[in-house]
Amino acid sequence: MLARFLPATRRRLLLSGGLAALLPRRYAAAQLAATHGEIYRQLGVRPLINAAGTYTTLTGSVIPPPVRQAMEEASRSFVPLIELQRKAGARLAKLLGVEAAMVTSGAAGSIMLATAACVTGNDPEKIRRIPDIAGMKDEVIIPRAQRNGFDHAARNVGVKLIEVDTAGEVRQAINPRTAMLYWTHIFEYKGKIARAEFLDIGKQAGVPVFNDAAAELPPASNLWSIAREGFDLVAFSGGKGLRGPQASGLLLGRRDLIEAAHLNNNPYGDTIARPCKVGKEEIMGLLAAVELYLQRDHDADQKLWRGFMESIAKDLRGVSSVRTEVYIPGAGGHPVPYLRVQWDANRLSYQECARRLRDGEPSIEVNASAQEGLSLASYNLFPGEERIVGWRLRAILEEALG
Image (cartoon, rainbow, N blue to C red; front, side, top):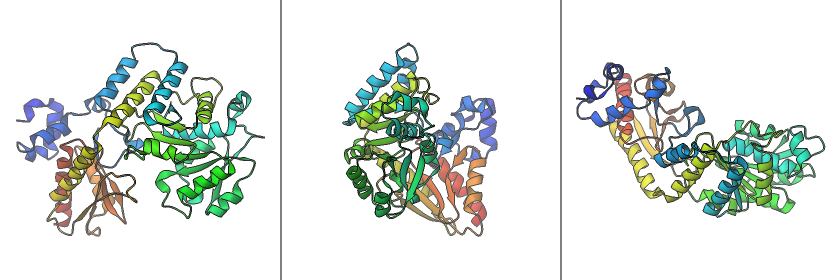
């Protein structure tokens, strides 16, 4: 039955991959896996089922139809890009109830622009000179436990990152050369400094405090609540939880600092962010994504996502030594259901299981840790894909574990 609906090459691929047993009861899910992503297969790139998360290396998320439509419509006309950036930013600020906002090339672009804004302000000579920042404020204070690869975007501006471990060290490190305090929202649990404490120290010293909240959606309230806590600048990815264009991000915060970020940004020439181009399609696509996100039924999302994880856990029942747990990572501030799967790893390593899922057809991406087992994310799955993940994983585990 399924075969007559598929292109010949895809039909052979599906049936030879061992999914023929899914017919006819599992027809809908099998068809979904077999027919999507043909444009990539023509290049020799296999599309995948994403049970890992909104990682840039896995192309973030998939944009919904209203966002695609906004981008397509935006592509039909010429507009003054600087004016579009300002007007779109004003619209975003109004939607989110924050002082000012702008569209960037991504969360990393937001980090760089936030840093540049705090170093240069609106001074055109400083804007032109960076990353040669001799004589300017050239230090950014960051908790040592929160260091990560994305803070390279701050270092692009030429600043030196000053690492601290305690609130007392933050106070001691602040001096006339301090341009910014740098906080990473997802890493609050790391180290000895509380978010409110870090923010309060910056406020007392009159130093701008930046929060990298790239992937901290949901909850939707983070889009305004973090800025309202008092953070001077807050960054979000546009291509993760918002499901906007992958090459987009949000920078929110103080009007004067957002203005300075604009002046450091594309399309102005001789600026640090001139290579970080954001086109009219990304600007209008992200605006549409934010508008859509604010209208979503987030409770329904939670119910759907948890159902995906429970379905996979059910498919694994009875397999020798297998244990499953649906959980919310971290302290629960980013409420996305995940599934942890563990078993006797002496018989099959977690990394080897992940490799088999990746190499099979369809390709499935999960997270694997020698200590924690397999971790599966719910929020990038399409309905029906959870069944494919459950069946494929069960088959691998039954073969290895008996």
